[in-house]
Length: 172
Image (cartoon, rainbow, N blue to C red; front, top):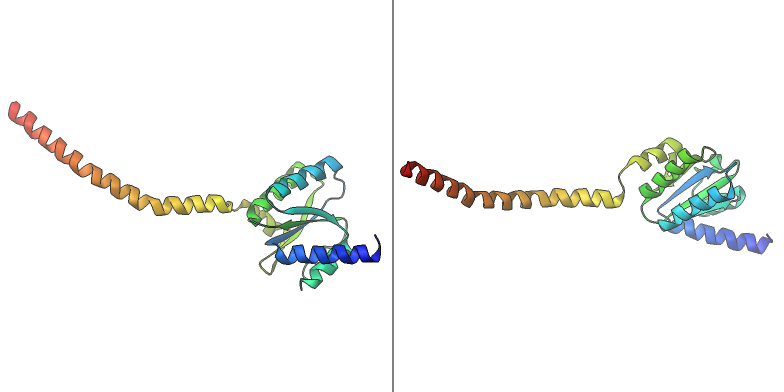
């Protein structure tokens, strides 16, 4: 790459990192091209981006965004996952790929101004996705109304049962 191409690449990367919801770094050394393509495709389905980046260029982009905590992890080959959307869902994909492809090693992450260790990224992956949490919240909010409607339906049914029992008792 020429100097101008590198500068353009770094400015684009800086902008992507600035607009992202989270960032995960991984060591991809030893992965095959089809494996990298599988990871890239899965991450892109979630609206995020998976890039193999040169450490010096991503370091400059991170420093442009005032992120210096990840410098120690920018050694060895680095793949950068720039998350747009649900960080837990992308972290879950990264964790699953790290299990499937033993050569993929999650190094660290960055979320809401805080550095995440590899263990923190795995804990984030274990959290339910945003959609699951919304479904649970909706079910919790809907439960009292459903129970109340059921209770209201039981009153006439109970009255009918009592009247039927009285009728049966008088007939007998």
